[in-house]
Image (cartoon, rainbow, N blue to C red; front, side, top):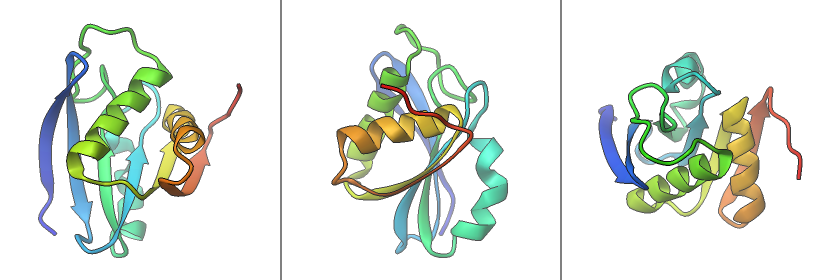
Length: 128
């Protein structure tokens, strides 16, 4: 698949995202860690791109995404992800989340368990 890059405006920010991998594959949301960007997960792409449609984004205030006018929070990151997935027409997906990205993944899976097929995190914790 040709690599697609774009921005989506949501909740007072412009969020940068990339689509790559297999266009016929299962959607796999790749969520980076705090103070990072989607680039920190690109070394993993070669292992998962053949079977998956990869959806990567920079959290607001990270990488190429604008900070916007709302405070940074896991809830805000979650809402930005949900807006992007809705924009892309994706309702069933898996998640790989590193650190803060994993925490956002836990939030998504807890709130929408029927939408998340699989959740894999690295260096993440979950607390109510």
